[in-house]
Amino acid sequence: MHKESLKKLDRWIRQNGWAGYDPYDIKGQQPFIMFSKSRYAGFASDKMLGRFPMGTRRFFRVNKEINAKAMALMARAYLRLFKNSGHEAYKKLALECLDWLEKNPSAGHSGKCWGYPFDWQSRVFIPKNTPSIVVSSIGAHAFLDAYEILGDKKYLDVARSTCDFIMKDLNRDEDDNSLCFSYTPVDNFHVHNANLFGASVLARVGAITSEDELKKLAIKSITFTMNLQNNDGSFYYWAPPDKLFKLVDNYHTGFVLESLNVSRRALGQDFKFNAELKKGLDFYAKELFSPAGEAIISTKDKYPINIHSCAQGIITFMELADFDDTHKEISSKVASWTIKNMQDESGYFYHLINEKGRVDKTPYIRWGQAWMLLALSSLPEEAVK
Image 1: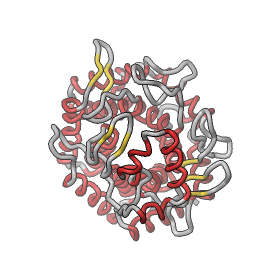
Image 2: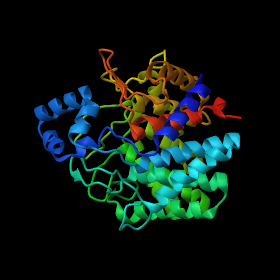
Image 3: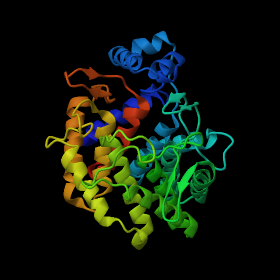
Image 4: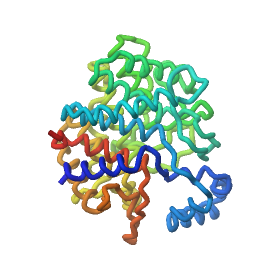
């Protein structure tokens, strides 16, 4: 079942091409940025987008675009498939993605880095192509995968340059024992999953290059987040001194756990948070997934069931199996449920299912297809011979 699903998705991506729509592309249009500043206007615009996702994009002339995060995720997936199968076609696709990333970084920074191809409004306005620690870290991990699988040092050099972006261009909140990297060079956000994405790259590169500075910064970054872990093992999205919503959501929790485990492997005995990681993983498995394999969006709401949460659940439980395989079988349950309920006959995956059972079938390339390609490639039986 999983193998056939992967083949269908791969076929859809090849037929569709690299460009696609994104849940946030239209929100970068000026009317929607203005709407987002009003609680009621923002609510109304979200409802309209949810009800008429494609019609609204056509009205505002939003075109498909290539997204750097999607390219990095697909590079990682195709590299994994090539490693498991030896099929040169997967290697070729991975190299196409990596080549695009090398040629299309955000300009004017200390190292290779990437952002989103649209404006987006968070607590501050962030212009399109502003590099983010999240997109850049996923890109760096793609090049590190390429270095480890293909053995070409040029890929390590790209990932090492991303470390320069993280260390030199991002803002820091730092003391003697901990630090938090900002989300982009234009903000001072304290966001746990973003901070740990950066730490995971520094740790992984530092382990390869034997640079103590990178590893020390990674440890300080990890310490910041682990000092703020909740008593039940969970993590809020925001960290102090930023305003907290005290919301624990699915896929950002998965990012935190995955990044911690990548850092654990890279740092070895220098990683001192095994008990906390175990507590976080147990919380994630118990509170954010149903026994049937549905990905619960947050500790406050079950819906919407979002394809992003489904994909990250598969990835997280597989990636942490080397640390604790107690919950490994959840990956297969989530994959089976997602394939049955959210994959279109043509191969792509739907965006979400809301509390009334209405399905948003928009084929977002970055949000759904790229993440699910990586998720399905993470399952051991997906070594396509």
